[in-house]
Length: 571
Image (cartoon, rainbow, N blue to C red; front, side, top):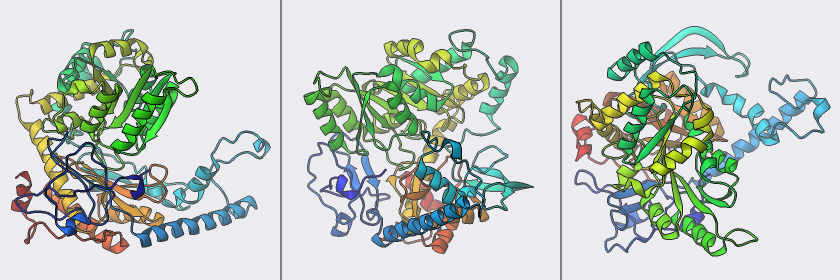
């Protein structure tokens, strides 16, 4: 969950990055501040109006070589009260409906504990089962929508309807075509069925087939696998790398191989479920530090060194820090320079999950390490996935040769899992070479730059329209806060009516009162697509009254947004 303002130390100096020679106002509203670690005081201050914003910002001093600004605006008090009231009303009616179901007055379609097993250990958690029956089912039509096209900048959806309040769905046979896709992780636009990547993947399918039918250690180690891993290592700037068939299993199956009993794992409170599962499976002691909060991490590291293991006070065998490059629900970027400084200072190891940041950040698309201009050797374990920026499947781990050789023998995901499909491997190779410029074109570099431009443009317009958006100004993951339960489904439905496909997110993926819509920006989005989406978002935002920001930012320039203004983002 996101921490409250009381948990995040205030930042003394607050500035915003100027663009196009014009000083922009700060992010709207009272914003949660993230602490800067070992930053020297800045002699210059912003305007009083900007200082009131409390946006986390670094002006390129200390461990940073570039501006670093993130915004987490506080929930307005009235909105928070109405959100709690909405959940309270839904809970009351939920208990009423459960009463009717117990007396067989209303039919219940969801799985429940059998009467003869009521004294057994319950299979279902009571609250989550209650939430699924009475809240989730009301808005279930907002998820699992089937598509019947490539998940590119536009998608085709299979139309479905429900006549029993989302318990079951019937398909009408109609296809909704040309829906602008604002939800897929297609950051660089490589999820496509035309072009060089798809053509080479088709050729490899003809030669190797689709399945390998064996693990890498038996008969499933192809020459394409070896070439892919060598290319990944070169792309990351590390000694060696290995690939896995599933991104989730890359974390959940490899962390137990790296850490065990007598080890300490320090995990960010907003880490992905795969990291959490891997940490739990390892048997290590787990301690959670506040999201992106360096004083919290430093305190835990100091306490771990001073006190050691519980009861015995022996030194920890190993201290492993787990962080992500881009946090997929918050849109924030890890404060990697400070994390590296702390891990060196206290002799810890760093595990970096770049599932969302690889390909999407940095001038060369090499992730958050490239974004901050750091040495890849300072990160002990570099993990990432091929499912997003590369338009493929699976994950990887990069690092020293000793690390990779160890994992090839001890990782359950490497020993027991079936090898990656040859056409998937070829998609990874061709898209990665494209990003690196080894295909003889500038297509990859152009897509990385286009993604950065689209991200800045979209975030700026959303803020100007008065929405509360979370995260870093360079993050292509853009969460827009909805808060109230009734507006989760309403926003998704109204957007789809206007031919815009979005992802809405609620509990348990977020805290129960921090529901949101999450937009994922892609290099495949044209300016016309973004403008169309922004116009519809503004229209639906007015309809549902979700423009919650208490400080409306004015447009950066006092003229209409046209192609010339869009191009000025590069300056």
